[in-house]
Image (cartoon, one colour):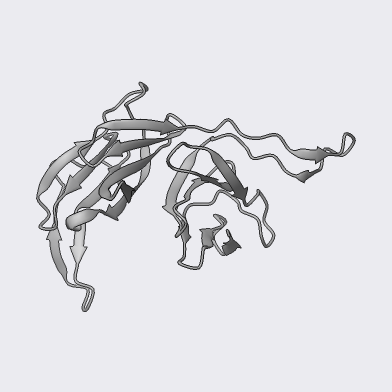
Amino acid sequence: VQVYRYADGNLLEVFGTDRMQMPTAITLGPDGEIYVTDSKSNRVWVYDANYQYLRAIGTPGIGEENIRFPIDTEVVSVDVGGTVSYEVYVADQGNKRVQVYDRAGNWLRSITFEGTEGQNCNWFTGECEVPGAPAFNRLQALHFDTAGRLHVLDNFGAAVVMFDPADGSFLGTYGSYGIEAGTLRVPLDVVVSGANTAVVTAGDGDRIEMFTTQ
């Protein structure tokens, strides 16, 4: 990972060369901690604000605690009875799930999604008033909105699925496959603004789509 000074673009630091094989995403946690998602080594490496190695989160594999080709990580605070702790959410692309760990790297739970059936569907055309949401296929990015909902972008499903992070319950979805406005084609990233507007890279090279998620 290379660190540059924002003001002039000068290189300040290089770290992680002794561990990282394919870093794909970076996020910041409490106390300036740096979480680097490494897809090839199947781990999330954690460094302090001075770029010193602290610990690894996740181990390679297909077991309930493992991750396989992680692609993105988000760190959020959790307030339980006035006590604040942190949870680490990892997009476990290879195992088609989101893995949740505590700050120390202990596995807490998994969030999986088998999809939903469409509602009020026409038996002849197959079109539905409320389209069904596809099951997890190839997770690509994670983000949280101001309401605390977890947004999971699925690359092949061309949609973003929203969950309650506490229990993994399905809250809704937006986006569908296509090349016209309001659709997605192999989307790569999602960021939700403070106004709960989701900004999604459409994936076909020349579009960014914006969705209202309230």
